[in-house]
Amino acid sequence: MGFCDLLGFLFVSYCVRQRSAVKKPPEKFQMEFQWSHINFTWPSVDAYHNAVLESKYIPENNAMAGIKYFNNRMYIALPRIRTGTPVTLAYVPINARLKTNVLLRPYPSWEMNAQPNNCSTLQNVQSMEIDKYGVMWILDGVRINNLTRCPPKIVLMDLRNNGKILQSHNVPNEICLHQGGFLNDLVVDESDGGFAYITDNSIQDPGIIVYSRHQNRSWKFRDASMFGELDAAEFEVDGVPNDILIPVDGITMAPMPLRRNEDRLVYYCALSGFSIYAISSQILRDEAICKSGIWRSEVEMVGRKQSQSDGLAMDNKGNLYYGMLSMYGVGKWNIKKPFNTARKVDTSRRTFVWPDSFSFDLNGNLYILTNGINKYFSPTYELRLSTDIKFRILRLTTGTKSYLYS
Image 1 (cartoon, rainbow, N blue to C red):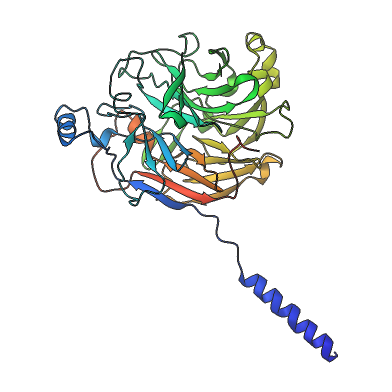
Image 2 (image 1 turned 30 degrees about the vertical axis):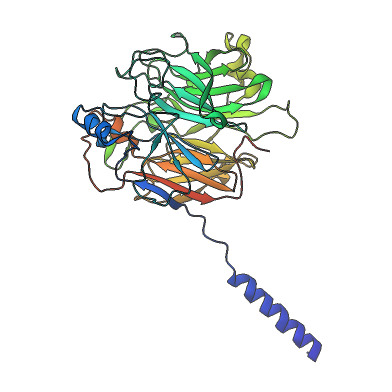
């Protein structure tokens, strides 16, 4: 080997060693916020004390469900599952100095959160989505208890204008039961004036509800694929067993297409289920097709997950993220590839206790809320105030944005 050859060999060997030394950072979620209990920025000390004395605020009964990021705020839905939940929609600044037990700020105001049975205010919010224009599409539709007599509704708020209500739609009883309905999760489609595709997690009448912003009306698709699956009904999370068939829950949507009128698939799954299904958004937007049975032949079973899931999320590169409830983790599948390429992203029996809601920011981060919400819905589980961490918002750097962005 000549001198020049020797130099070339040494140079290549050095570069190879350097490249192998620079390892890709592990794909793990990092803690962003955590809570052992939920409290709020009260109007006054007296207001706080009175709420405690009158049991309008029972700390251990408050739970988080949906999360969505917008303009350096993390918005949080707090469904009224048990009594003593004074606020059902709030936020925290993403750059808050404290990361543990940070106080939640009611949104858009205390008055919009704390008036039981005043149907113009927020009653029982489970989830929301925020579109590219700063409009929050709110599902005020948990109607499985007697904490409100107001009909379920979809509320559109302008986050750029202090939460001004742009539109509100009371969902008819034949679309979502006023006692027994459960507007659970949604995706927003900006086609033809704007649509929301919403999972109704009602045990009595599950399905996918379509809401047209332009028409301010709704209709519903019902199909066997939206019911729970027997082989997935029995599972346990953090010592709390589930043995009932919980229907359609998670929903997400394919990314923005290159051509605006190009078809997109909407993906959904039952909570008590392993299967993920898909249906064309063009079909969902057609109310006439909804009233026929033709559309059912278009439902596609795209794959079977390793675990039951609550929330689903899609990024702008076609990566579908899903919670793995019984496996305490998060999975990922790219919709352009066969489903058998799906894999686990992260798992932990300590931190992923009921991975639920997802959100993306505009800086390449994915957030997930883990909340042990099964304990709050269990009628036999005794909730206790303690220093144990019950809610976590975790962050993963993905380098992508949500399905709403190209």
